[in-house]
Image (cartoon, rainbow, N blue to C red; front, side):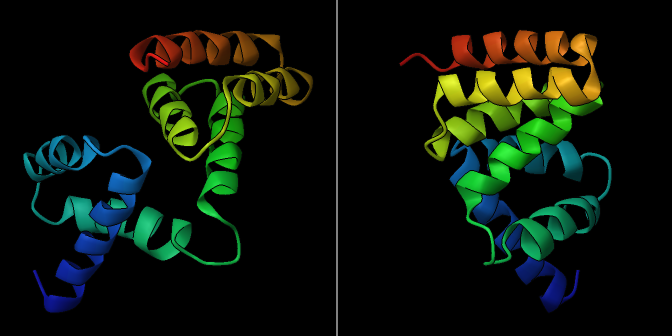
Length: 128
């Protein structure tokens, strides 16, 4: 791993820590068990290169991510994670539910139903 890749990995894990403080060790172990470069390639691109860009704040990016994942309807685990991450950035439960409801209009009711199920699980995992 080069110095640039190591720095990119570090920046990606730091951003991940902002989203969910307990996630970096678990996510790093998952990626590293497959290949030592995968975390830097995948999260380096996603978090260090894109999500960390300054033009849109992290709270708004997480709201957009929840909308996109809910619309996809096929990424339950990632949606549940990003719902928790959005709440860690100050997005309220009511806002999360409204985002998912909005996706019923553009992605269909089945996608929204999957989104509501992920929200229910995320809310249960994070007692308030």
